[in-house]
Image 1 (tube, rainbow, N blue to C red):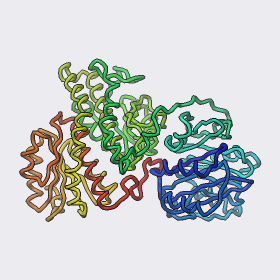
Image 2 (image 1 turned 90 degrees about the vertical axis):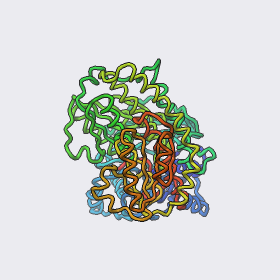
Image 3 (image 1 turned 45 degrees about the vertical axis):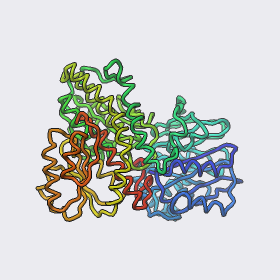
Image 4 (image 1 turned 180 degrees about the horizontal axis):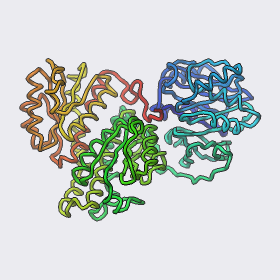
Amino acid sequence: MCGIVGYIGKKDVTPVLIEGLKKLEYRGYDSAGVAILNNGKIDVVKAKGRLSVLESKLKTVHMAGSIGIGHTRWATHGEPNDVNSHPHMSYNEKIAVVHNGIIENYMQIKEFLMGKGYVFKSETDTEVIAHLIEYNYKGNLIEAVMATLCDVEGAYALGVVCTDSPDTFIAARKDSPLIIGLGKGENFIASDIPAILEHTRDIYILEDKEVVSITADKVEIFNLLGEKMDREVFHVDWDVASAEKGGYEHFMMKEMFEEPSVIKATISPRIQNDEISFDKFGLTDEMIKSCEKINIVACGTAYHAGVIAKYALEKMARVPVEVDVASEFRYRDPMVNEKQITIVISQSGETLDTLMALREAKKKGSRILGIVNVVGSSIAREADDVIYTWAGPEIAVASTKAYNTQLAALYLVALYFARKRGHLDDEAYQSYVQELQELPRQVDEVLPKKETIQKFASDHFNAKSVFFIGRSLDYALCMEGSLKLKEISYIHSEAYAGGELKHGTIALIEQGTLVICPLTQESLFDKMVSNIREVKARGAVVLAIAPENHAEEVSKVADAVISIPQMNPLFAPAVAVTPLQLFAYYVSVLKGNDVDKPRNLAKSVTVE
């Protein structure tokens, strides 16, 4: 979950690396460093803390050169400090390495190298790569890297420079994202597109277990057997402004205000003449009709979208659905077979636990449908079918617009499956399709209520513990609302099914406890009002999210009500989540936290 950038060309490399790392800091921000090759020597500068600390440090030293690698870290092995920061050097200081991922057998390799006289300076797994490349180096850098990668187990994206190769650097990947940027007289590597977008829009997307030799004028891709691989150029068609704040104080606020447009971008191209259709969809009508079970696998926010999808698929398509946390799925020997469809959801398309779950389900014969945001990502390439959410770059670590677009895509899938399985008549189908197309407008109506939400947040940002309660789809919505608050405010919060209150949870409610209650499910409205009365009787302060037609009634029992448009309850979570996101945002701001880069977190979790 670290960010890598590399450059070779004619420019001064330091500003290129720093600007690239700024675009990648969402991937890790507890330390950063650069290694620059010049005049037969590698200069390394690295620093604990945000990238600004490294920038300040670089102003005190003179570093020149036109080839180098940089890294911004999210710590896995070894605490954040200057020594554990990347890049890491080989024992003879001829080789420098930056790495994203985890080397699972690093202790065995470390013991072997120590037996050969190598001395380690850091606590990281990455340092073994630098020393092992040196051990394998016989005058050809790419061969040394290939030999090293044959010995390591785990995930990696690598950038490697060597004093003996002043005109070349090496990159490689397995289960961690890495792209190659193609310029004129210059080339780049990066963990994500925004890092190089101001320089080039043409990229190569690397496959697993590929190694790349990069000069200023040439890029050659090989597999680990040394065979040259052909690759089509991918052209990025979104602009730099999509990855900039655009006048907003934080990326998270900008991305929440993009929700109406990105939901529309997800839905509109897939509805033609009031019928849902997907381009290049290999799932046949027979596969959908004969499907005995759907598995949904994801992590974090994407998992919560999957829980919503379970309700939608079971209600409309009448097919059993099981939702799994990806990190648990493959370790329980899941009962998956060729009569099942597995839906994997990931914003980045690189979430390692989800990718491993995909491979487990595929190995057992299940057809895979990927729902991802990033074109050409690992999950998109390995899934049998893929639906892109078209959310655009999401820079804030806490996901917002990606969740809304995942829900929109999943609603489309549920309706498509229901139609193919014959469980919706024409009238019901058309009604759902029309209601789905109203989602962008409905979210747009909620966003102006941010000032009301900000006022409530200002009264309760010092809460010690917050409880989210809901029933049915509202309970699934509460999971995401609670996660959002935890992620960026660091306040303890929990989501509970409203009917479970009396089974223990209500013991935690005391005078002044903040409870947040969505009431979007018409059939369960009265029961949720009763739940609000229960917690109010024990001293709770209640914020309710309710449709406009019930707002006045709810205001009689809750302390504050945020109204959303009256709508089909099945689609309500895609709109009702926005007030919960705004509440978490304002609480974080009022507490003085770094909203876009919450502590201990990184955007794309590419380690298990």
